Length: 344
Image (cartoon, rainbow, N blue to C red):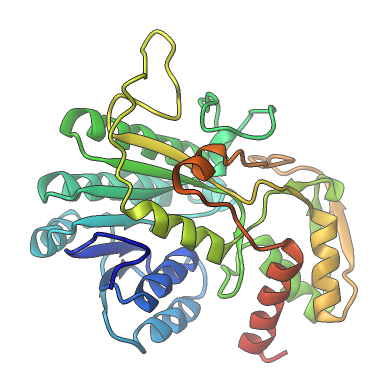
């Protein structure tokens, strides 16, 4: 069964399928009747029990096959791609987290650099017709012009995590240029919702509030984030699956556009296009959980930025899509899931 005209007839791979965004994307694809192969290494960056609970849900239906594979295992990745010859690959697996990259930098080199190279090589040698891959709003780094545009220069990352995501974009471009491999990079902006990652701010806040513990608000709480509901993100990805970039014939090396290329390579912001004050979001959590938060106001952390704001003009133009979920509704859905999952 096609997804809004999706013309994928062969195998489809989602890496990081037990992760937060990967899980939701696979659910969308399975509900539409698509068959999906998913891989994940189920590492312990956060509680693997949550990842296994997501997998349990995915395995309840038909059309899903799971393999536990580490991206950095070159032989296993080669065998995977040679066996399945995926028509389309959605690469979401990565070592995530800005702050964790300050303590464990080698994990980012293994997963985000070597692992991504193994994905690119698998696609190159096995006739993949479109690779979508996760980048991050973190690549905008020291940029101060808002909203963040894919046509802005992003060569000043302020964390190792962001640097690895920018490196992914550049590696993908080289493969698009050299081998005509169509690649699409997705810069996600503060994705949230049910089945959320427990290392992310809203989850940490919900945990602390329910336990009567203080929450840490950096930059004295003066933060703005372009919170993007996960179902909106999954819908955008589904619409992009069958839109492999062809290369921009108007692109010029005299005035290079950082978001496009003559090669079949493209970058999109996946955001809500509406930054929210962090204190407003905390208030929504307090309302949903029925408790007031004790707030620790702290200075800015290394590698963090005070505001994110996605310009999604290109996304709206190319796939006719804009996120639909208001922050009030999205936080309410997250709180409902949190209370059910943790029985609070």
